[in-house]
Amino acid sequence: MKLLTGDSTYRTQEQAIVHYNKEKKIMLGLHHLFKAWKENNTEALESVRKTFDPRWLNLSDRIIYDSNNLSAKIILNADSTVTKPIEINLKEVPVCRPTYIKELLGTEAGLSYIRALINSKKATKEEIINFFVALSGKKEKKIRFWTPTQSSRKDKQVRSVGLCFYGFDGFDVGGSNWFDGDIGLSRGVIMDSAKQTQFFSNKAIFDIEEETITIPMKKTLIKEIEKKQSEKKKVRIKWELKTKLT
Image (cartoon, rainbow, N blue to C red; front, side, top):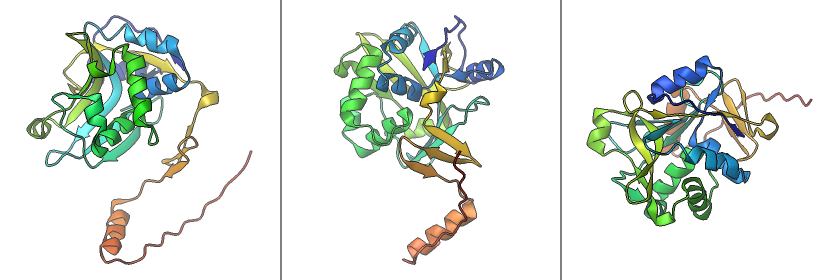
């Protein structure tokens, strides 16, 4: 992974995405930084750390909160026309006002939330803490997360993710920023195609690192499956799978 030199222009997430799409470049997301850490790319982490101050570093990660409950949809590479956006549905994103990383990881919902942001279903708590310590250069007890209250989510559902240093030598991972309001710096990224782990075919996502295949389904099919499950009936799905090895 190679980080592109960012300019000094402050933009909202919405404006930054438009900018990188026009440049035919990928906008940096938290999952890119986690991949850089996994690859021991300290140069990339140290470079991006310089943009955490004095304002937010806006990422390409977006959160769409439900207005009636704590569920949410995490979108990585949001609105990108250069790379495929990734959608992850969560039953709960905890309210953090703020919540420090160790406390957040102490709950299943908190662990799932951070795993979604870094796009790693198998990341351990220790790996997550070590990553954010390496990324921020701060101690674990100085790393905290922000997300909106339920009433705030009802008022404004679409938010962006950003990173920033705050007073008292701390580090914030924000999930409350307004994607069309809060301005910050941004960065682009070039991914090494030789290390690509996700492939896309007809909207299906093949992840060779996670060893999973994600296949989108029509709402009518999902409802039918849920109906059969509620009736404790077996669900059988048939499809024809053709493969070609090259």
